Image 1 (cartoon, rainbow, N blue to C red):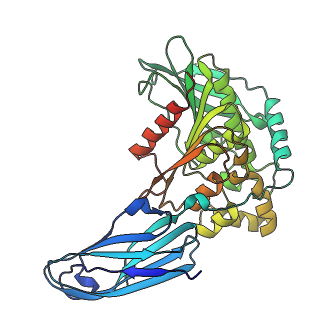
Image 2 (image 1 turned 30 degrees about the vertical axis):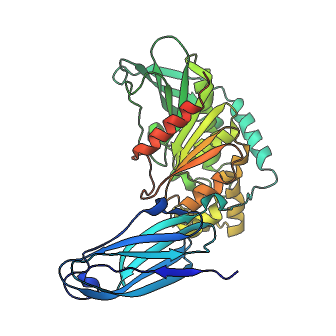
Image 3 (image 1 turned 90 degrees about the vertical axis):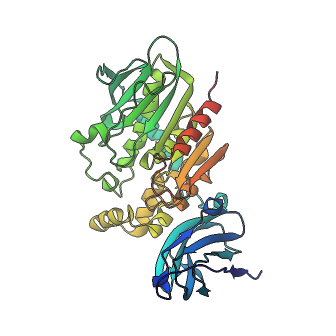
Length: 416
């Protein structure tokens, strides 16, 4: 079928000298959150001042891997003081994520990502034949390690509604890991949220009096967070790269499960209502924990990391650069590298998730791009939905809408 690409350009207003220098501002409206099911369109307002201007406005579109898709342009001649809209329309784009760049007389004006039918972005599993036996063996090794939970109440952080404890426990390989346990005062059992932290994030503790009806445990997994003073792993993503059995994330993924062990062991926890959440690296741990542990009632990852390594490394430079540098240092060829990483690729885990999932993502994310978020998400077989934050990059935690959606999602799946 012949692909249709067409453009509708209306006028705009400029000031000063003719051409691009006469423009004061070009602003792209966020139509449909820049997520489209079929026809793609962009409404752009060019703002100018008192003088007429002429020039050429151009839209360039490329895939998220940098391959050119199309370029469209139109001359304009704009009367002074008469601003009008510019509209570009495209049809026939395959499912995926794209980069649009707006230029005026050859000068870059604005750039943004957009998506087309993200639920159809396909990234087939590339798990090795022994993927699940490998992880079952690892879980068995974790179960053989006595956790030896140690709790100490933090009087400074504890409040009127909840008590705060620092926690230590032993995880896979005998590693000591830590976290903050924030639990309502008084008797009873409460829903509990396990929160996993981002890559290299500073330790943080939930506010004791933020709410009194839920327990929270913020895990610092090995070498990170509260464990940084004893970090023996260096740059975590490089640690023992090439060794499936000794790679950093084998232990880190087990720390995610051990956190659930801890929460489930607490008498204040309602075992029917254990939820997991986290962003970036914490989003990856959220999805892995939900894949490996059936005690999870619902999962809410945002901007999840560690998914679809072969495509991931074609889109952004980090973490590709340190991984490839380490692979070269160790003499690991490309096929061997991706074969090893497939054991730690989130998209290969998620078919085992048995609980509902809510995923948040930033459409302008250049650390964990939306393509990689959906590579895992679209392999989930349970009830799921996503929330897009179209102007956000590698974050949604600053977005009020995400926390409202996440809280409602957990409330929706709380057994009473």
